[in-house]
Image (cartoon, rainbow, N blue to C red; front, side, top):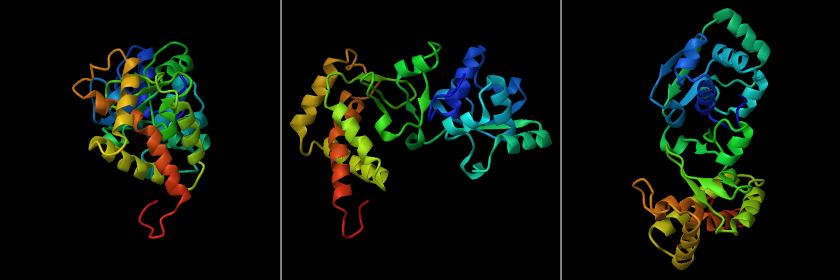
Length: 263
């Protein structure tokens, strides 16, 4: 089963394990890969897995996915200190011949490093109907799916928000893509997001607009009252403030700060 673009390694290994009706730790153990680190009942939802060269090679052979495709699609395939631009199928083969066994190390990322839930309909199409669950390190503009007008919330349990009540997001999506072509765009977006989120939480500025947008969003979400312990205002916050976040980030890029204190 080929990985999705930007998919987490744990998500991809978990989908492969489900194909063989095995758990995430069982699949590597069955092909000679030693799993170390954090383990849980559903590792692909809460942990990330890093593979050494031998483990990478064994999984590539098992799934019949070329090495270079895995390296391109899985951004966290290896641990940061083990990432090597010269890592090729030839060097991997030499390593496997020298070591034989593989190691898959798992850990639980911090909340700020957790991958996002991919669009379930896009996942179904990519996996040919096998599953709708996959996690990926999506760029900020890809968290919202323009084809299916939906966005998945963060957390161990996927929560899909139907955004058909917010047609303005289509134009915001295009503006966000143009923003990302500029240098330091991600820093500008992160800074703008922090400012706009603070204004939203403290009900400063644009309160009426954001409240109306939340009502329109909830009108298409029948389960907006069931938020697993979190308020609807917090669950829908990333979607509600997204247009103003992109607008503020673009303003920062057009008008650099002469003091150098902002991106």
